[in-house]
Image (cartoon, rainbow, N blue to C red; front, side, top):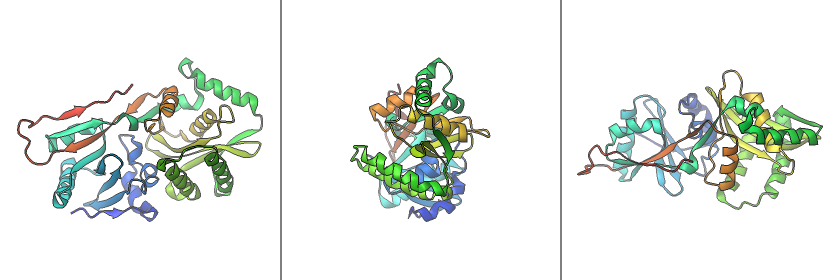
Length: 313
């Protein structure tokens, strides 16, 4: 029987081993992706028979269940179905990678899967983001070259506890110059500060770009398997090429020792962010699906698995 608990920072050590493998490379199934947004999504967790389950409150969808972290998919899905039946609540799974739709179909033949383009993850080759080689990335390389021509006294280094105060000063300046009143922006800033102050406990890697000793950009991420996940990235746009420098330097520093891919997460449907992320030429968009399950009999629809695809261009 599933017994869900509200997630707190103190659960890190309990849940971390379940997230050590991420074959689908989705940011939603990483320590950073889960813990940074735990309050915003009201995330709860349960462990049953050594399987980890998450329940979240997702805006626009209501209560959702993520992909269980374990082995026997059929048993896992049945556990979630029984949980919802006992509480007479609808059953929806999200996010489900495309390769996992077939196992879900076998358990719930009367269900509808809807792709969610705004939340597709952008996956890149690590080597592409390190040096922006080739014609396709010429624009990004030009930004880096302009930065190098303009600013002589710069450096990029791994963050330590001694750097936190300088990055906090940068964050104050960044927030003041960013006109965003949305709840997601405010939560992002709160959790950025939380992770920054304790990034080693989170198991994160972090680096900052400085010009004349002043922090002008930084990034925080984590490595899982062959993928470097970028959870937090901020830069001062007044320094031309600053973002491209942070991207390149962070990749050079941490996309090593078998790391082949970089996941830069989604664009949330923001047109400007989408244009930016596409300009770095992803090798794949990692599709995510919301799967709405119709419990009980569905006359005339037995075995009819419905998939509503979104435009992924």
